[in-house]
Structure formats: structure tokens, C-alpha cells
Image (cartoon, rainbow, N blue to C red):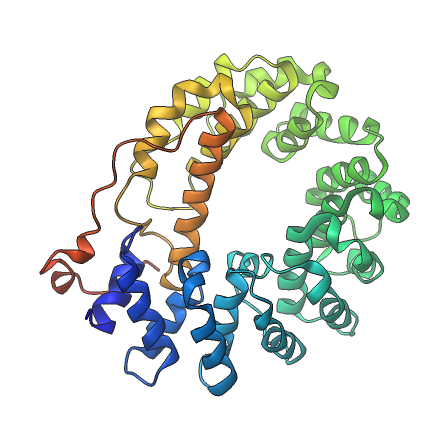
Length: 388
């Protein structure tokens, strides 16, 4: 039987640990062992990898007092409704996830089950930082399913969390049309709380809510022409051929010295014009097979945009398959989000290949070194591997 310590190390380090590793990690997380803390942090990030252990996790959640948040997150990650009572208590007790990527675990649950609790938490005054950022992120993830919460979101336009509120309203779409005038005020700078970084997002949200692209084309087009390009390009990409008047400007930005701007411009150009060939070249140049997960580099975004282009990005398939077959996880993210970050990258790669119309089958992944004697003993473990 694999030891709990080596199993925890394996699931943190390797992308495809054997089922016996997750079995040992779940056992440690649900039991009273010296590895319980690290195991619980791993299980909270596991998602579908621990689906077969859902009954054991739910039993431990009912019976134990330690690591209840992590056990509830593990169930949420597989969409198991038995997570709901603990999650409701957690939110009502003002205990919220710290990182946005952790919030996305909860989005696997049906919005209708958690939304009443989230709406209630959004109402108090004064507003709380993590309540605001975490719950607004979750509402944005749910998108149109968050429509009943529009009355609770609107007051946040007058708060330090206006940017998050604008994003939620845009993701909700037509059901947020009641906010059209206020969105227009933010987009034009007339709103008292409007800041420069609100305008493009507000204009995009106005288009999403009303279906009228005029304001978004004006505001985001002006941003691209003025040099604040990377902030307007993603919205022009969403507008697609409607933004044809800006195609030449966008094409020029594909040679920007900034990698994020090049990626955003390439995708926007392909979406606006339908001319994918120059965009694919730019995007492929930013897909580094040795990327460690450093969020300062747009590698994952470039992969996602290649998927968005679809079949014309077929030249990317061999590289994407090779990256997907990699043995080790991304090692840059902090330990408490490392598995989540790596699984998000795996999903991005898989979805990109599917959108391009290619099989995810590439070079056969090697068996996890977790099964080879001596390898884990030489690795100092997840805590020593942290990057801060």
C-alpha cells in the first residue's frame, strides 16, 4: 500500500498519478493522520479525480470537525450536492475562498442551489472584501444562471468592487438590461465611480445586456487606437465582424512589443476578419512548451485563443498534444492552487484540441514516476517545492 506521504507528493507533482495515489490521499484527508493537512489541501483541488471517493468524503464531512472546508470543496468539485450544507454554513460564517481559481470549484454546483445564500451575503453593508470578490467571481462563472442576483449586484457599481460587478452583469447578458443606463454611464465616464479601467468592460457589458454594439465599438475602438490596446482588444474580438472598421489597427498591434497585446490582437484579428493564418503564427509563437504556469506570460491564453480559432489552427495540434502529454504538473503556482492551475491548463489544452477538431491522442504519456521506486523519496515534497 502506498504511504500517505508519498501519495500526497505524487498528486501534487504529477499530472496523472495512479488511482492508488488518490485513494491514499483521500484516506489521509478523511482520517486522523500526520498527513491530514496536506492531503486535505490536495483533495480540495482534486475535482473529478476523487469522484469515486465521494461517499467516503461525504461521510467524513458529516462526522469530522477538521478540514470541513476542504472536504466540502472536494465534493463541490465533482458537482455533489452533499457539499451544499457545509458550503452554505461556510459562506454565512464569512469564510470565503481566497483565490479566484478556488472559487471556480464551486461553479460545478447548480447555481439555483447556492444562489439564494450568495444573494443574502451580498446584501449587508459595509461590504466585505472576500465576500465581494469571491461571490462576484462565482456569479460571473455562472453567467446567465446568476440573473436573479442582478438586484444584489447593482449596488456594487457604487463600491470599490465595481469592476467585478460590471463583469458579472456582462456575463449575465440580456437579463441585466435593467442596468443599461448605468452601464452606459460607466462606459462614457459619467458615473461618479467610473474609472479609466471600467470603461471598456462597461461598454462590453452594455452590448451584452442590450444587444446594441454601438457603444462598445466606440469605446473599445477608441481604446485600441489610443494605445491602451490590450484592454480593448478582447472586447473587439467578442464583437467579431461588427468591429471590421478597426481591423487594420488590430493587425498592426500583432507586432506589439507586449506579448499579451500580441496574443489579444491576433485573436481579435482572426475573429474580426476571418483571416486566421497570420493570427495562428503569432499565437503559436507564444505557446512555450516549457511554461511553468507563470501568470505573467500569456501561454495558456494563447492556447485558448488557438482553440477559439478552430480548424484553421490545425498547425498547433502537434505542439498542443505534446504539452498535454507532459508528465509533471505546472510548478510555478502556489501549492494550495497548484493542482487547480494545472488541471485548468489541461482543460484548456483539451478543449483547444477539440475545437480545432483534433483528437487529444498524441505521444503516449509515460507512466507516472510516482510508481517508480526511489523517485518520490528524492523529491522534497510539495512544501519545499513552493514558489513564492
